[in-house]
Image 1 (cartoon, helix red, strand yellow):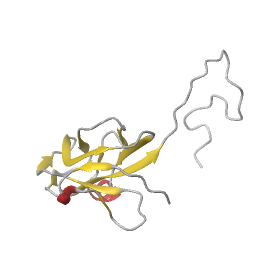
Image 2: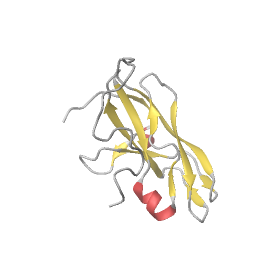
Image 3: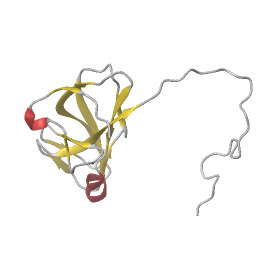
Length: 144
């Protein structure tokens, strides 16, 4: 497994950590107390700023426990943190549940994963080559 250096600015309390060795995601924690009404959303700061190496992206994913137990998820999942961004990370949570969701300072609200990506050169053509699927879209492979 390869590791990369990610520069980080945050207090020790809010340094992202893995839940278990070998996990893909690092937990992000709320720096504030806030209530999210049913159907409501909130932008929640987590006290972390990072600098990624070129060719990498950080992706902010929901925590499955919040989704399953409370109906709370990351609104724009996954959130994208580009290598050039230097501001504080924040997570937009939405409450799809039936009750007010209380976030307390220090609560784990999301997880961040790091991924290498490729850049592309778009080659404009008059027609795309054929494929078995063709232009069949959503649901085209059936329901079972």
